[in-house]
Amino acid sequence: RRIVKSDERIAARDSVVEASSARVAAELGRLANGLRTGSVSHMDFLDAGARVIQEELRLGLLAGARLALGKMQKADDTYTPDAILAGPYGDFLDAQASNLADTQSGFLQGLLQDLLGGLGALSVFRSRFDLYGANVRSAFERGFGLTSFAQNPDGWMIWHTTSARPCKL
Image (tube, rainbow, N blue to C red; front, side, top):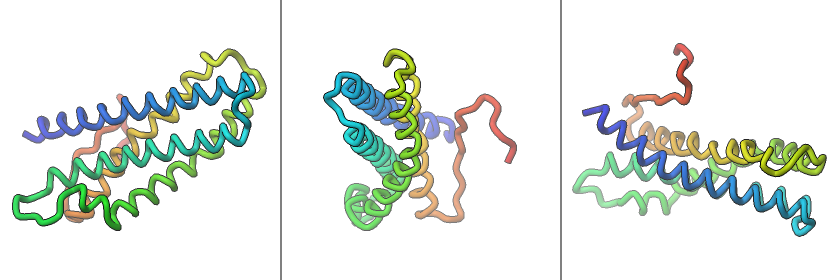
């Protein structure tokens, strides 16, 4: 039974992550192309890049939290997951998304410098664009984990690693 629940969570996560990752990569690609053609300024690249990353991280956090809230909701609960996320807890997750996006600022600046340095065709940068989008996965897991433990601090959960050789805890 636990494996089935885990598989459902992974499927929910992957559907959010795939869509958000694709949006981040597509927007960064569009901005990079605009840099090359001169239709996007350096500051616009950084601002719009940070904005799309923050928004998609926010969506990942909220999706993870919403899934955790839905799994823990009882029939007699007066608050729905959406009502909870519209309140102070949603504000907390928004701040988390902002903090996570801020950690990408230096990487975006490095990407800008590499793009301006003409280190190859835009297709060379595609994997870097994808890496920024992949952060949505950890945001989803963070939203799910924070919400699960906020509701049950003594609880436990299965940790899914992204490595074939996870670290020993």
